[in-house]
Image (cartoon, rainbow, N blue to C red):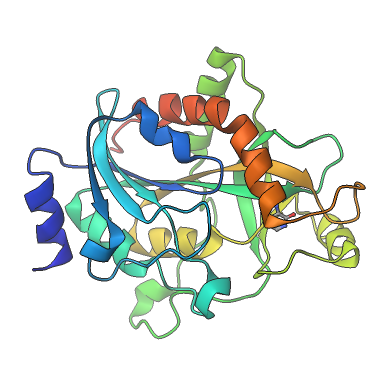
Length: 267
Ligand code: HPA
């Protein structure tokens, strides 16, 4: 059976409008879902077998408030296989199911001393540091995707408004994609700061490119788990990332749930 038909069969009454990708620290978003249906990735042809501890590998379908959503718990990272198009098929399927917007989340290191661990940062733009693209090999003029305002200005304004209403502080800045899986060197962190990045992480950028290629609007949020290498005495590790992400998970997910629930349908 085609993947889209499997999803339609399992969630016949739900037509998702917004796709949400959950990164480290954002897992408790699914606590806010009502009428939730779970489909493990192994049952969905073309979906990745998520391999990183802390990433579930489950497609959730349900509602956030009145908003019908598809939540991708678990993404494939470039550093797992070297390929950067691991999320191409899931995003294509969700677009064909009716999604008009992609909301991405991730964990990231801060490059700004005034943006400490536990902060939330809205992505205003990104730097594709590895200069890798999930669109290599695709044909047609649509592959030459315009990346100006890749992170939709109206959705960002909406997110700021919801954060303000909640009394939550929301930073906004440029996310640099580092290929990983190793963390950056202190010299790389100094370089990234000079280049105008505010946060660094190992995901999100390929999916933003894929989503813009599909014509989806994109909003993305980083949960800051640490200051960049060399900016503080703490020792970076994946366990440290997950532990920090766990600490702020509830507040981050509450904000995300409110933001997604009130996103409008594009005209
Ligand atoms: N660097 C890259 N990726 C990350 C970091 C970091 O410091 N923190 C969380 N994800």
